[in-house]
Image (cartoon, rainbow, N blue to C red):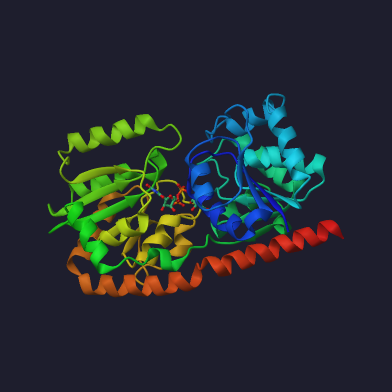
Length: 384
Ligand code: UDP
Ligand code: GLC
């Protein structure tokens, strides 16, 4: 089967990294059409996944208003839509991976007469999107998609609450290659030395810098933790959140934490960095749709604490494979940091258990088989 994947982003967020894993097994039978140039294209090329930047002009990618803008400016999008229609004729199925890809994909699926699959990586609620955007996304999915793949039960629930049709939606979690998350003791020690982790308890935060990802919560928690506790913030502002980056630096300066909080920017060595940390913290203040970083920490065998909302609740069983804290509450995070400092043995046992279960539950081979089965069914129904 030949699949045309569509994604609006030129930058590699979690949805894009997930798409890479899904597209890869299709080899030359896949084409990833992007609506913007950037590092995501380079990553796809490195993995030998066919990619083409289809947009002739950049489209805004902010979540709050852009979908409506995208619809309102369909005229402006005509060259892009035309290109997608042309490409789609050579493929069996259109796979929209983001909301603007859904808008363009829906129109193209209609004109090229190809079935449309929408991979829903978002919680369609007013905490994340404007009301109009919600309505547009759900209406287009209901009208044009043959299948909606939700990245968690939480994303599915929000889709249904927003008026999505129940018979359209299936939940498939993100898949991972467990081997990629195994780092040798020697490499871990070397990285710890390079980064000056000796005698420190390091809490890692791995996420793009954005207000709802809650890096400020971790900084507040560090300020209330014992002096050997330090943090690394790994990730960049991907979608223009420069004000937040400034606020974070200001917060660090005001709390006098310059020596205890480090900004490492976007990194490609996530497994190694996570393995070098004593704890990985996920601190989203709005419900996380899935939360790749939570599973990745588990696969590294590093203890993880996550904000108790959205998909994170499906991933973490408190006291069994990690910790959950109330979103937006630095005090609770400090308490967990103290537990990890004091109860090392118990925490290590928990992290080892998490590694084993995550390797079984989120294996990319199994997840890709699930997706492939779903797509085959859509294709067969369309052709029958
Ligand atoms: N990530 C990365 N480099 C960084 C920061 C993050 O490769 O510097 C990756 C991280 O390992 C994870 C993804 O970006 O796989 C973020 O996905 P997640 O689902 O946690 O959040 P999203 O940003 O998609 O909302
Ligand atoms: C989105 C969500 C994130 C999820 C990722 C992969 O970027 O924000 O929670 O893990 O997609 O599905």
